[in-house]
Image 1 (spheres, rainbow, N blue to C red):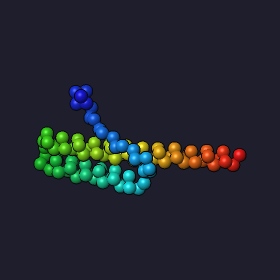
Image 2: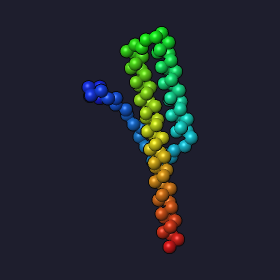
Image 3: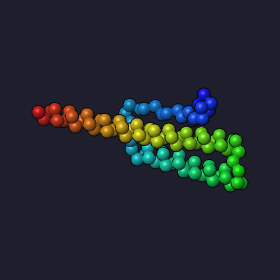
Image 4: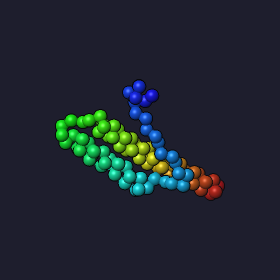
Amino acid sequence: MAQAVGAMLVVLPRMDGGHTATTRDVATLMRECAEVVAAVADADADGRVTERELRELGQQWADVVAAGQLMMRNLQARLESEVQQHRAAVEAAR
């Protein structure tokens, strides 16, 4: 269905309730990016890109998007937690 409308379907990672954004999220994102860069260089080495290479690159790009989405979700969860803690501290001080 996604291909029919010129889009790409990306399965987003599930949120682990206790997980918060860490440098590990950024490291995962950068590792996924590096894999895409290497795959593009390999695919382009002969001056052309095959359907198989393009399909594999699409899958690797989806991994980059998923890693970025997980990082952003975890950062959002961290922010929301900190806001709640701040509000609770303000209420307790009243």
